[in-house]
Structures are given as structure tokens and as C-alpha cells.
Length: 175
Image (cartoon, rainbow, N blue to C red; front, side, top):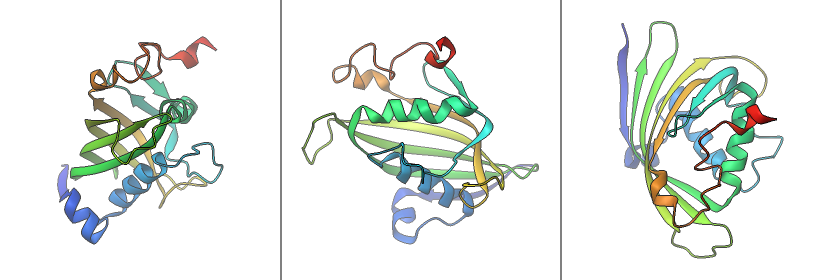
């Protein structure tokens, strides 16, 4: 039977660091997303080959489509940062972990040199993290499935409607 193993606030996580391997993995993922160059070959393999990423607009990305989509998505921002509100961790009988997070994502539009973000957006992310000892994983863990829910409507004034943020289809299927 699944077991709630941890609940931490963002303040607790900042003060004491991650309490579990899954939280450490998730924190390293969030840190990687803030890197200016997501094409860096040193970025770990966060997603399993058979992973599925469900975006809030009903578009799914699979396996080797996920990181190129993430690079396109975050590449259009000058800067990204995250404030963690709460993270719940559930240990499943099959060895996977469900991580549920509430986060505020701060985004700076391209060319912005301000200290204050262009827009801050609340989000929830539900992740199934599984053991995988493939090369370049973080602590032998990878995302198996991810559901992202964020209010992209708040981004409309700052990004064009044809941005990958709002695209209602998986453009990797068109190639």
C-alpha cells in the first residue's frame, strides 16, 4: 500500500536541504532548468527512455521528445527560478515514488535585465520517479511520468500565441 513518507515546505527544504533521494533528484532537476544553456552535454538524464510528460494543455511528450521540448520551452526565457511551497512524497509498493509539488515559477522575458521577474506563475507537478541505473542519471533515479499544471494564461501578455508555451499539439510528431 502506498505510504506518505515526507511532507516538506519550501522553507524547510531551503534550510535543511532535501531529506530523501527523490527530493534531491527533484531539486537537481529544478536547478538544471534554471541553467542558461540547457544544451550542455553535462546535464543529467532526468527522463527515462519510456517516460511520458503530460503538459497542462493536453499535449503529451514521450521519451526523447521531452528534453528538446524543455529546451525550447525554457530557452525563450532570460531567466527562470523556482520557489518551492510544499513537496509531498509517497512511496509506492513497486519501488517508485510519487512526488507532488506546489511551486511558484518566476520567469524573466528574453532581454529582461530586471531583478524582478516578468511574471510569476503558480504550478503543481505530479511526478512518478523510478529507479534506473542508466548512465548519467541522478542518484539512480529518473522521471517515469510527469503531469504539469500551471497557469499559462498569465503568460499571454508576455509571449506570442504561437509560442511553444501555448501550442496545442506535439510539434515533434510533425517532423
